[in-house]
Length: 416
Image (cartoon, rainbow, N blue to C red; front, side, top):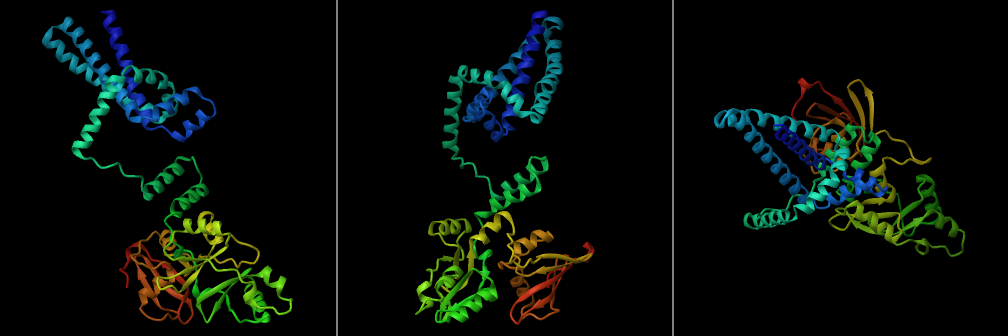
């Protein structure tokens, strides 16, 4: 009787081993284990080798687990049948073995492995590697079976992780404490970076600083002094015909030379379409060694400009220098209200106030004009969700700032 009991205990231990190993490798942080392997950890190297063919590893674990559980049930049933007869023994085997395997062979090891996946994966890696080679014929058979099933059922390829799933993953990692809020924001910006079109972060046409191609030295110098920019656009006839860019250093280096002409010191402009993604624009700017791109609309007209600094700010946030006027995009001016810069992107506005707006507009100011259906005037307002939005500063055609009051939840109204 001692030998069957020891056999049952050993089989139960192996059942727990396979269950724990399955969960540990499924929950494994591959980046962490790869770092250990790169630092010379032998067990981590074996674990990464197993993870490189996860289907084969999973098949090995499942075959081993099922063989052990079947053997455990068979040995326990034989022992109890010998002690209590065929009918009672089979019944007792079901009543005793099933809950024991579920609790000690499945739930307990999987719960522990879920909390400590790396140590358990490294501990189990050598034995699993040996079993993978031992069960190679069965693994090969099941691999062929999987391919046959996939062809018969024409299963689609597994979907790639979406941007939303990546953002949720970053939130989970931040919640676990592996990264702080700033690191989380940087990762989110990097994930969104490839999806952002150029038109979302441009300096719009109405805010451009430019001079005509026939401008005098005095006019160019005055424009540089007025704007404090290091570069100015140069146009011929209208802003839709940008012919070059003038750099402050080049201007002051050449402005005292006899026969000076603005055309002689122009840098050729670099053009991009408004729909181009900013990561592609950045690569092109790096290739051409340009600091600025002129963004064109669908008609070939000048929509605005985009600089390397604008693109980098999408990753790291605002970059201020000593000449920049610091503008608070969301400034709290009342217990329930904010003064908002209307050049802020509509995406940032939605994220700040936790609201969803159905609009094709890229900027808050454009969305407000879309709601009021007329030229803006100070005091015009609209309501959406629990936000009451009033224009506080505007020009003839543009909304500059708005006061956004957050209404109590029970006062929510539909958009006007």
